[in-house]
Length: 139
Image (cartoon, rainbow, N blue to C red; front, top):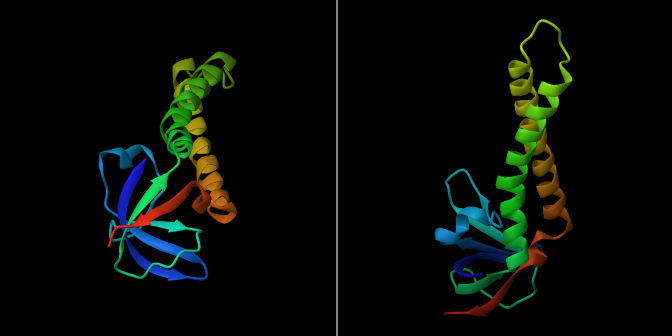
């Protein structure tokens, strides 16, 4: 997946590129969104680019698919698994099993998002920037 972005800064920590959101951005999650709703991407690449230059950025397709799975499909699977597991266990007598299933599903959903959050933090530390690279400078 190739996208366009504008270089914000280039220093020893890497290159920060402000991305222009497109239709395919919804499932990728390679960018970080700050408080002002601007999407930024940090790339660990040594390249001579200056702030303000437009660059072509490639996101490896496998990374985009993995991100979509972690953000959308895994929580849905865990929601259903938690619901059916807690419903079948009947942990608290006197409480309808449907309510136990709902509590189990929501608990599994919450724990999945916590796990995905910490996994994302470890990706940032270990090199999410290796999954994306600048192909060329447009101007």
